[in-house]
Image (cartoon, rainbow, N blue to C red; front, side, top):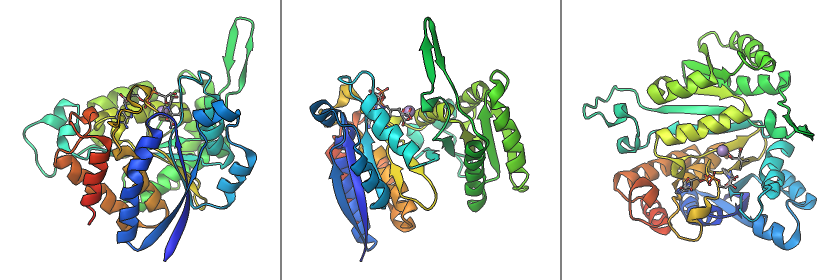
Amino acid sequence: MNTHPIAVIGGDGIGPEVIEAAIPVLERAAAKYGFGLELERLPYSADHYLKTRETLPDHAFRHLQDDVDAIFLGALGDPRVPGNEHARDILLGLRFRLDLYINFRPVKLLHPDLGVLRSDRSTVRTSDRPTIDFVIFRENTEGVYLGRGRIDGDQYIAEEVNTVKGVERIIRAAFEWAKARGKMRVTMSDKANAVPAHKVWQETFKRVAAAFPGIEAEHRYVDALALELVREPERFQVIVTNNLYGDILSDLGAGLVGGLGLAASANLHPGRAGLFEPVHGSAPPLAGKGIANPMAAVLTGALMFEQLRHLEAARDLERAVQQTLAAGVRTPDLGGGARTRDVAAAIAERLS
Ligand code: NAD
Ligand code: IPM
Ligand code: MN
């Protein structure tokens, strides 16, 4: 049997809860489709950092780099570490050091009553009405996230790094993904009207788009895009943008289709092991209560299976989540009364 070594980092807050709830669901799907998961739990988290002062030791980094097929991560962030230095080393550290330049974040309406917009709730539904279904390609290795800059007296200076190589590879990834799936439009978003350095996004987008003549290449300043995403999200298919705007737009996108409890993400570098984590964080107010929504973690597992080339298993997981939503088995963030473990069990049941 094909068995994948997978590192699991539950992390902080609701991270371990949603990851441990999702794992049996993923194992059930794997068994159904004839492959195995060899899971290795790693302790890196705020707790571990506070006890040992260790964030992500070098030997662990090398192990993650060399020996696993994927990393499945919950969330990092803890009020006891206000500077967030452990998350910077573990989460951003893995993204940067593994050069996972694509942060892939799908936004899809999985059930009509999850939409927050008037148009989603319209009582007149036709099967040919477009639905919200787009993906965000967030650049994941540059931008302000590198943390470059300085504090100089009363000046707090943050530098934003945009390289031709970095911008080109994320734009190209977005077009290639669009082409492979028959998508007709790629929207690039920047703030070139205010940030001169964003010229590199404009120039590179034009150049790369020329190699994909069948795909409409459109541009939106990020402020205008935020408004349009609320007004008419159905018209978007593929959005490509920088690290910071991608972070913000992916929470906005999650808000359009049910919230952070449903939003999945994958950090990828084609040909290498990826890092798979829900879009949401550690949600300190929910930690330990047993009511966090595990669906984002399960859908993140589906992205991991897709990357591991188990496409049927990935689709089946999404279907099982969709049917669980339709059956009304939902945690409180979606207006239901179910607990984390009930939702996970309901999804698993729908896989047999
Ligand atoms: P958050 O995503 O943790 O939570 C915001 C709110 O969204 C929560 O209070 C909760 O009401 C809701 N929510 C999120 N996930 C949910 C789920 N699975 N089920 C039900 N409700 C859910 O964002 P935050 O409060 O801004 O950040 C908390 C901490 O998490 C911070 O330290 C932040 O830096 C960190 N964070 C980590 C990641 C990550 O590890 N990938 C992502 C985002 C934030
Ligand atoms: C995310 C998170 C992280 C980010 C934080 C925790 C650094 O918000 O994965 O979206 O900004 O990338
Ligand atoms: Mn975020």
